[in-house]
Length: 170
Ligand SMILES: CC(C)(COP(=O)(O)OP(=O)(O)OC[C@H]1O[C@@H](n2cnc3c(N)ncnc32)[C@H](O)[C@@H]1OP(=O)(O)O)[C@@H](O)C(=O)NCCC(=O)NCCS
Image 1 (cartoon, helix red, strand yellow):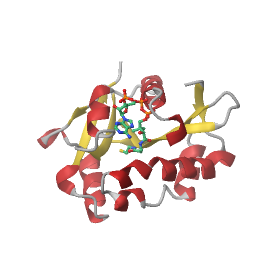
Image 2 (cartoon, protein in one colour):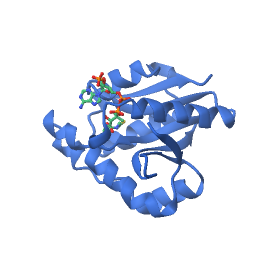
Image 3 (cartoon, protein in one colour):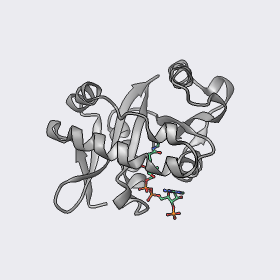
């Protein structure tokens, strides 16, 4: 990764483009419904951007090639979305952005990163486990995370394959 920084307001449509393009591999594993999901709406992204919660990894020309949107859920830095432009995939950019989010959280005194993801998709649960996350079970799933999982189930994502994960900061 060249470097990362907070996204500018005029980069949010590019952020949406990266999210849509990064979904393509889901099509190849029979999850076209996930690939076809719309990206985060511009108004949501704009709110996050104003709050300094959209991080982008940029190329040598300072153009975004990946992004992370961070939310606050139950006192932790929640990775709402992480996407890497497929043209820049498998170069450590996703891992690097997660480390940047960990730094972002550390500066704010937040104890951990959290996310929800697919357990069985290779570049989701297993990938995050390699990046230092572990699956939360039972009562470890805090109320805000449980609510997010419920919303995802209502959107049609298979609840049996959705998990919450956590990575300690520091
Ligand atoms: C998940 C994602 C952010 C990873 O970003 P990345 O920069 O490509 O990842 P890294 O370079 O840090 O790590 C690469 C590793 O991820 C895994 N991976 C990435 N893409 C993969 C794919 N299409 N198939 C299988 N494994 C994949 C592999 O373990 C890979 O290691 P390898 O290249 O040695 O096999 C990126 O694939 C992405 O944007 N995916 C679509 C969006 C998504 O699923 N977001 C998460 C929703 S919760």
